[in-house]
Length: 614
Image 1 (spheres, rainbow, N blue to C red):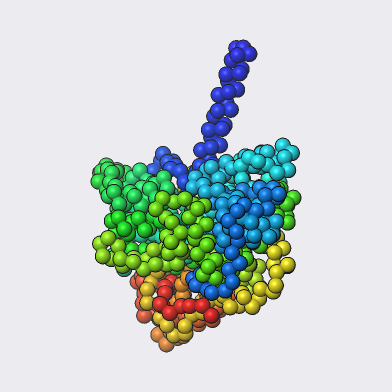
Image 2 (tube, one colour):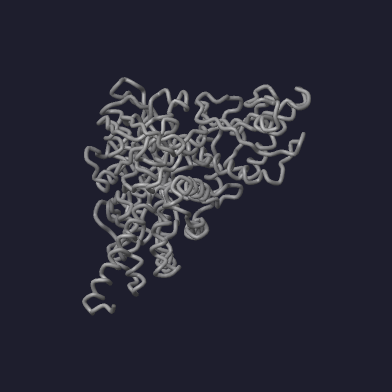
C-alpha cells in the first residue's frame, strides 16, 4: 500500500519526534547528574563497584588569608568590544578564582579577564542536560558558518569524575556534525576538597559493613554518587544499582532530582515500600525503608546538619582529593580557531586562583561575585566565604560535622592535574577512567562505554599558557604534599586486599601482575588526600622467619613500583610498609585456593591528622 502525501508527512513528523525524544533521553542519562533516569527493567544483582584509587593531593593551601595586593577589578562591564564568550557553571566554590578573574557575571572593567582580551559571561545552570544542549546548539550554529555563534554556550564547567558519561552523551550527538566538533576538556578552575561527600550514620564510618541495607538519597551516576561507589569498592562492599528494589546485603538508593533534593529527602525522613531482592532475584517480600544517608555538596551538607543532623562524613573529596576537579569543556573546532581567546581565559583563571589564594581582599571580593553569579537563596557573600574551607560545626543533634571545602587552581595546579610536570601522573585521566568504568559496570545496558581520554582531552592550551608564564617549577615543588615520618594511620578510610601475583618464593612480579598494579595506581592517585599503608602477607608454606622477610620484600616492591611510576604523586613519606608474614591468614592454608588468598598485600588508606604542605 502506498502512502499519500499527507501520510508521508505525518510519518516523517513521527519519526523526527522519536529521534529527538531519544536523543534528549540519552543526553539526560549521558550526563548522569541532574535528571532522574530509571534503570533497565530487568533486576540487576548488587555488586562491589570497581576499585577506584586516585592520585595524591598536590594543590597548595587555599585559605585566602594572604595579605598581598589583590589588584581588585572594577564592577562595570568591560571589554565589551570583544566577542562575548559564555560559560555555563554550577554553584561551586572551586570556581572562586574564576569569579575574581572575571570581576562579575560579565567580565568587568580592569578585570584579569579583560586584561587578557576575553569578554567572558558566567551563567548558572544546574541542569546538565541543558548544558549538553547548549554545547550542541553552539556547535550546530558554528557548523552552519557562524564564526561567533550567539546560540548555546562556548564552554561548560562540570565535575571531572562525571565527565566520561557527560562527554559520551554530548559527543554521540555531535558526531553528526563531524569529528572536528568534538567536545573536549581544556582546563580546570579548582577542586572540591571536602564539600562533596557521602554522609551516613556514625557507625558506618567506624564499621563500613554496617552500611549494608542502608538507603541513600542522591543523584544517581553523578560525582557525589561516585564518592559512595569508590568507598564501597575500597571496602569490598556491594551496591544495588536498581533504585526500585531493596537488597539487605547492599547499599541501596533513592534517586533525587538535585543535590538539594537529596538533602531535603533525608530531612523529610522520606520512606517507601520496596520489593526485597538478594543477588538480583526477588524474594517475594516487601520492606518499608527510610532514607538514612545522603550524597550531596554544599549547601546540601549544611541543610542536612542544620535541619535534622545525625549524619557524619563517611567519605568525601577531602580524602579523595583528586577525584573531583572542576573541568572546563568546549567545542574543538571553535577553540582551535580562537586559540588566543581560550588561552587568555585560562591564563586569567589561573592568575585569579593565585590572587584568591594570596589576598584576603581578593578572596572576599570573589565570594561577593559568587553570591551575585549563583544567586542561591539564603547564601550571601559571607556564606560562600565561610564554606570555601572545611568548617567544623555542631549539627542539630549536637554531633560534630565537617561542612564545605573547595580549592582554586593556578597554572601549576593545572599542570599537575593533567600530568604535564615531569614525574607526575595525569590525575584527570585516572579520574576519568576510574569513574567511567564504574558507571559502565553498574549500568552497562545504558552506558556500554565512553570515549578514550585521548579523544576528549586537549592540554595544548594550558601548555601554551605555561610557555608564556614565568617558570613554574619552584611553585610546583612548593606544592608537593609532605607526610610526617613515623605517623600511623589514625582514621581509616578504607581497607582492601589486593592479589598481586609474585614469582614463587620471590619478591618479583609475574607478567600478569601489571593489570592489577595499574588499577592500584589509579585508585591511589584519586585518594591523594590519604597516606598509604602496604601490609604484606604470605601463606604458611616455608618457615615463619622466611615468610616474614618475604612479605616485607613484596610490600617494598609494590611501594617502589608506585613511587617510580609517579614520584610527584607519591612523595617520600606517603607510603609506609608493614610485614606480617604468615600470621594473619584470611582463609585456611590447607587448600591451594586458601593459600592463594593468603598471599596478598592489603592496602589501608587513611589520615594521620598530621599531613600538611611543604
